[in-house]
Length: 401
Image 1 (cartoon, rainbow, N blue to C red):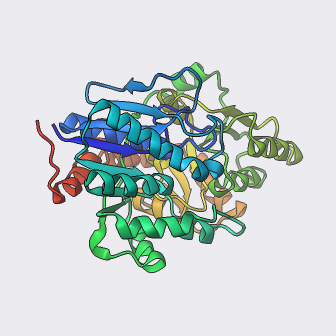
Image 2: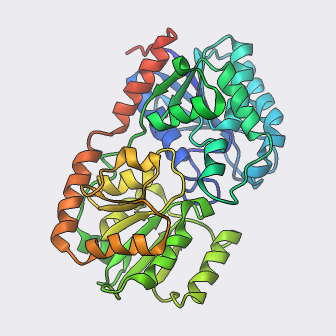
């Protein structure tokens, strides 16, 4: 059986989603690894320890396991992790040497992991595939004032130059890599991400609302990290602009009371006079998210930048229409006027216009929700895994049933 090493320094697949630095990439790493395991690969995911008392090896299933590596303080913010990368690399090397394992291919996720992956690939004489998930040069252009760690862009360029293949979620990301990083077109492969169609599925809105203790008001939903680039502040300013739908409540799933951005947005809700209409629910277990999507009338994804847009896809799989920013990662998943609406401007009036159309028309919401589910059905994780496995096969690494 071919053995694959996933390197995911900060994106532990066991972390609580919506917390600081834990989001769609964590889901991607876990779901893809398990789908590849079902195809016949042996999958090891190397990631940092992020909690006390964690065992070194955490089996996810018979083919997939998570290996936690000590590298710096467990609560270190993502911005500080570059300084602990050498310690992480040493930890992986020690584990592999001690266990006597041999890996046929490395697949790194995010630029921090790419730094580790390029070193290990040379040492192990194994192919190196990388997926960046987000890119510094795109992110800083997406929103004024967005800043990234100083070494990030240079490291991304180095990883692109040394890797064997770069997997991107959209053709737009591939073009950006060529234009902004000078990436060779021949290295890039487009493989869209996926969604768990068994976990995320349509259900009774009334039952979901009763389960969550919600009232009968119109409900819009935000799911994700509380990061300025996710655009939640735009959505909060949108609520007072809703003229024909005054009974709308906003559920915010993600974040932690200890985070500065959580406190800032909570204070903003009071300043806007919306404290009674916005409920900050904090981070939730991934398995509990379908109830929130099913309970909502509309899911809103107001991001300034998305490399893929997993939240939109999860909502669509639950039959919930989506109102989202017209950014490339979301344009690939959604179809404007079919599964919801794509908003071309990051301003409250534009979002309010689309939301009012949906909230005031039950039949339209139902129709768009049905179409959204049909679109999501073509994007299960097994399909993503097949695409990734084809990339591995280009380098002579194929699954063995």
